[in-house]
Image (cartoon, rainbow, N blue to C red; front, side, top):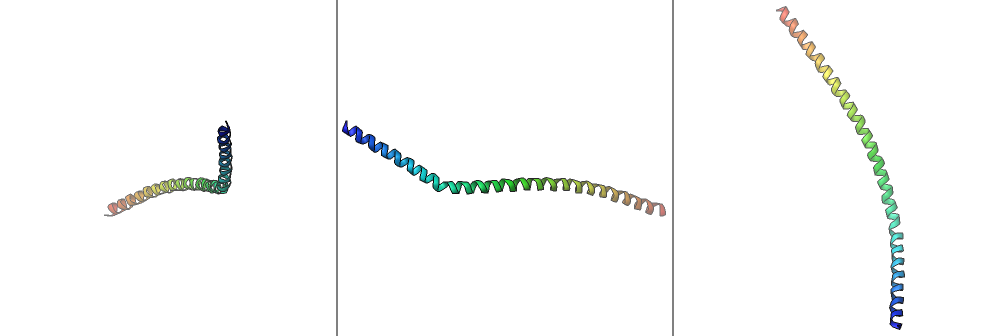
Length: 90
């Protein structure tokens, strides 16, 4: 019976030590985890900003493509006018 008490006491001491070590580890890594969380928040904010900027750029690209198509149509019309002018003059 005495040996059981000694084993139980040692087990209890080991559990207390493990809990203490766990708290120490948690206290050690907590600032690192907080720092990583802050970095993650900043990265998410930057990602959101970049997505918004990308959207704006995509809209501008579409606008420029439309403008380019309109200019190509005008160039084509002017080319046809020039060809007609040259054809009718000869």
